[in-house]
Length: 268
Image (cartoon, rainbow, N blue to C red; front, side, top):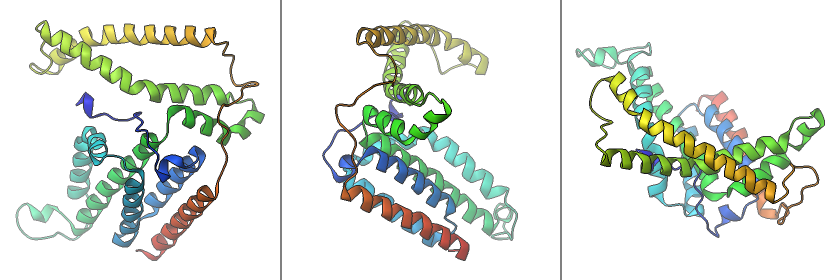
């Protein structure tokens, strides 16, 4: 299960999606989320699925990676679908013993909720798959730059977010190694009741925390050796600049969000 978590991974490439400005991709993801939550019916979701499919094809991100990223939330998706299926009021689907507890509104609500969760996760994961952590940091730093006038430590916040995102795959790999080592010593993480399973996780959590603090200390030392002193006076090797493709993509996603709002008002 740990190997299925792909958040924070970056797949290098030279596709139209990879070449977009990271600020463009962040804004487009926000507009995509707005459009997704404004979707009401099959027409709206069909448009969003078509846009997401086009983005995935252009990015050339492996479908296996996208499906692996969804595996950890399968249980949450199934639970959400069941709750909406059986606890949404409306006209029953049938008079049969089981189907009479399921309403037609519940079926549509469960279907759209599952679609919304899957599309939301896939769309946001596509951002991290096609954008390096350094590019994300620079983009967030510039997008949140107006907050610096309010004395908000924008650069420090974006750096922390980028480092946390970057070290997710590293910590998952470290956890997998520790679990394999403990299993080789006879540890059992699957049998017993909930309390026993929780106690079995202690030999994993202790070395994991020690390893995390050690990595944090090494990272702080490396940053100090490179004379890092925050975002004041900091320059960039690659300066972010918008191109014609960025403006075209931004305009397309603005139209997508506006179109979804209109379709939502029309009940489509």
